[in-house]
Image (cartoon, rainbow, N blue to C red; front, side, top):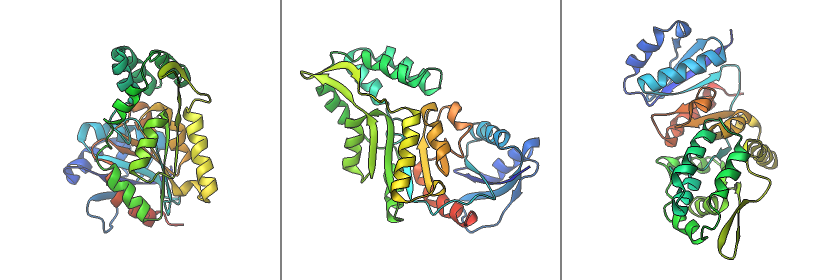
Amino acid sequence: MPDYYCYLFNQKDSEYTLNHLSRDDIFKSLQKEEHEQPTIGLYTVSGSESGLKSALYEKSLLHGFDYCLLPKSQSFGPFRLAVFDMDSTLIPIEVIDELAVQAGVGEEVSKITESAMRGELDFNQSLEQRVRQLKGLSVEAINAVKNQLEFNPGVEAFCQYFIRQSGKIAIASGGFMPFAEELARRLPFYQVKANRLIDANGVLTGEVEYPIVNAAVKTESLQEWASVLGFKAQQCIAVGDGANDLKMLQEAGIGVAYKAKPTLGKLADCVLNVGYLNSLVDLLPLIEQRHRV
């Protein structure tokens, strides 16, 4: 069985967490490692990756902690590119749901969004289905929703830290460009990729431009940006919350599930359900130290 480093953080009581983990057979090999970061518990553990990730995800929800599980033998860093999903990751809302409220179809669209985020629907079809519901909505509604935009807690602190480390930040979103561009006015995102709604005579037509920014396009965007910048996959981080982000998270050196649906949370390298993105400020240097080439 391969060995992993298990990083535990944002826990109220580290001894409580450790005691509950060690009761489970899958964590019998858990051994504490000494290091100099007091807010993070570092352990080694052996087992199957899928089994460990699934068990950690369930335990984290039950006992309240965040974690990363990374192969000891794999190198990571120095981290130089962070690619984010937008809706429910950088910002606390799903903008299409807010536009739907403006159009008077909020409940119908929200149900489709939730199902798509869980991976139960084809993303392209679900997006087209939701956008059709917006037909006839004034483009002024876009400005109204833009005015509601705010970053999730910890986003600005983490992005500012990452930029100070000579990193680049980017957005790859299945949401819409006016909102991604608005966020890029507030933080210096290197690139933004998102869908474009079609309008005519000041109202939405109920259509979206092709190609749709889906899981494959998100992944290709990360690959392209990393290649242009000369970064390896191990230097990249991807952050998302839904099934549509899985491929992008798997392409990056480290994939972070943020307040994510179980479909994504059980497969991600790192899971943030308790804390916020600024938790990564202390975590990334420790990962770079432990996984240095």
